[in-house]
Length: 397
Image (cartoon, rainbow, N blue to C red):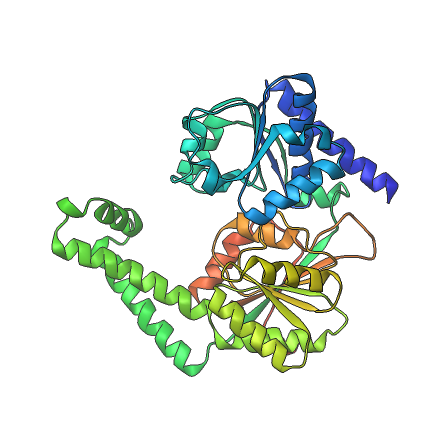
């Protein structure tokens, strides 16, 4: 294990040197589990030891604020912590005219959102390190990141596995059937989608709808109706597949069939996560919840109980996607999908640890076959490997 830690340390320092050679302005694009937080802490710590001024660490959540504070001490940089502001993007976007010697933007794809971009335009960041698991897929976000902090070091999740930086993984994609009522509702929503897609223009419907909604004053009532109904159909389809009743049943069956596993689940909405939590609890399995609608005390308790093995299943939505080390989880069940490769890599990464020949991170993805969700899944896993497609839960359990 010591050798593996040394390999990881060497690779992290390589990323840091790449940033330094680029003039201390650039992005580290590294698969989840690489240890980007340590790279960011080393960047701030080493520079503040050599320079006057302050450091800024940008994170997506309040929980990650606390985690970064702990990690400064963990990695031996507590001597500079009193000169570091660790802020959520939501708070930092209110800064104006601030000057920082070094800024680290963790999960920078979130900071590229229009509501947060003022962080990078209204404040002075002499040295800027941006970090994320993969380049943003949205062209606007990608262009902004390249102009703001060009990539200086890139390593994919599979490359991390090959180098022994994280554990290997396997993914099982299991097809889920809709109930008769869900199938009927999905067909209605899909027919509405096709209808308004043709109304807007078959080959340019998304761009056309966006233009109409962005310029309502210059759009006709019919165009506005077509655009609104087009997006309603998209939302309706997504809600039906993400809340598919059999996903809840299958997750409970998986938890019951694998009592020796510590399972982390991801739902598509907090409501769905609550339903999944209830179904698993009804099987007599110790289970906890973690999502944005819960109080901090409840979330902290859930993480502690999972770490201590008081509960065997932790049900989440998106709150655990980024930055958290979910102790000892060895099976992930993903029920809520979109087409983003970044979210998938983050979720898979929650199951990966430093390489151990006996420890493989296993991920189950439940998707509705022959639906739009299947297409989203194919895009989301396009950069991953070791994938099996299984036709139904009975073929897996």
